[in-house]
Length: 288
Ligand SMILES: [Zn+2]
Image (cartoon, rainbow, N blue to C red; front, side, top):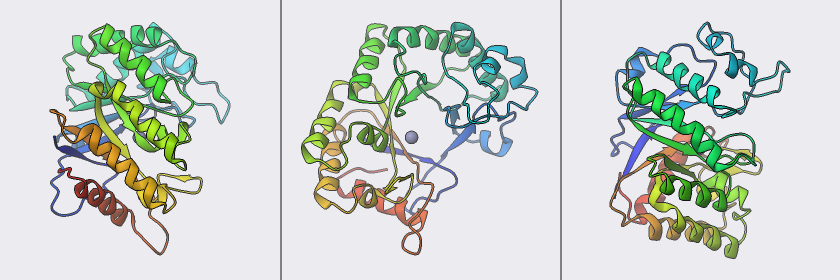
């Protein structure tokens, strides 16, 4: 297999890597996609419910269920996957934004409510998927884990993956490793890290993408994997050994998205951090 590099926030890859697919934001405050971006291959990154949206565009004002999912208070966030109607409006919002373009991938995010049943989510997802298909948008759709949301830990991944298999759905799974390891409290503990990585075996056949980024203290999306594991080389090695064992020899290629928002002040730029992560992966045998 190979890793297919996705360009995240214009972050430059080392020069030997040829990256052609750009991530394009399409959260609920976006009303138009940049033509320059969508004339190339792109991955559409949809609403993820991390922050209050202004809902100021004419476009979003066509969708009463989406509007009603966010209360007016300053810190409230749009709530995802609340009903069949929400799923339909979400699809229609994306169809209008795409305006005839078809992305390579659409990235979606799980329901905010931890206890949402996977069956209910998949019912809503199928409405979303079918609405897109009816409008000629036939591309890979993948869902990312988010801590505190329906898809947080290993068991959530297994449950969703089983439901995907049961329905013969082509929904794919994005493995955001740092979020998963944080949720499982695996970043400081060798047995828990081993166990967590081992748990991925149960659903790896549905995985389509990796997200990797560092963390410094409580600052997420900062630095590289040495920072993430607080310079504990054994933990970092164990993490990569497991990725290698799980994925290096599978048939299909996987997307790679380096979600690095910050470097380490006076030490490493964002670009250095990406270079380090690429090096780590190449050292264990992956190619891009
Ligand atoms: Zn991510």
